[in-house]
Image (cartoon, rainbow, N blue to C red; front, top):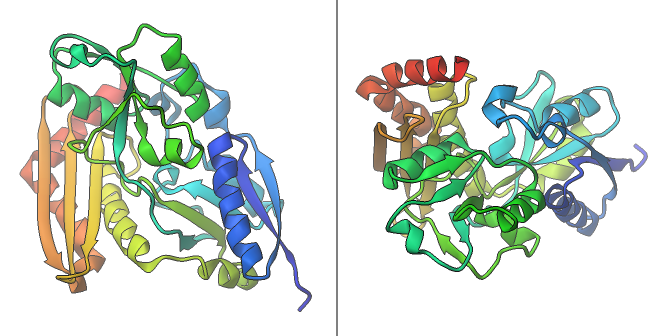
Length: 308
């Protein structure tokens, strides 16, 4: 078979292009020929509506899904936390790269007095909003949209106290400022800090090439987190956090999962350590525990609230 050039589809933001170039370099190092094709996604174009109003599931990935299915690109690179838990028919997960920083951080303006009193925090994420209000019920949370660069600029020119970002995104493009604090109490989005490469199921050449980039530990941990999300959400948006970590010394998985009400006042959490052998259904069983512990009613309430 003739050596084909692997066309890598990506969004055209600085972070998305950084991710695509990272995958490109890894494939080039393995001897594959590549080409990057950048596409604008609806999630980048419509900035005046909160994400949950856009039916967020897949807003950032849809354009690239279409480009793959129509044959314009062969593979696509995504921040894994943006990817719906159910991939479109014909598209498969080909590799998960080694995970970066999983933390959320608060970028502020040099003064943290507001943490003791009242403050305004910006985020476009229901998960971050709910966890912030749970910890700081006197604060106000406002919506913040756009790619990482846009959001950093909006913060700079606003009268907000701070904004919440994923540490990994800012670190990847050297935008992490000196004025930040690690929010180690905030449970990250499922698969935060991980990059995923998807390919067409029938494309054996690309799937084989990309599979060489897969990091098994990250694959296992993100599988657990996304399984947890999928069982809880069933396709709607909700304040859900999940983090699975592997402990090499003990050969165990530590899993933390949480579901909040949108105002942050209700919280249902799970925290467990299991032997590595139990990883395949850990996310599912953990979600079941949350649903049986009041989560079913809470999810109904969230769906009703978002419909309004």
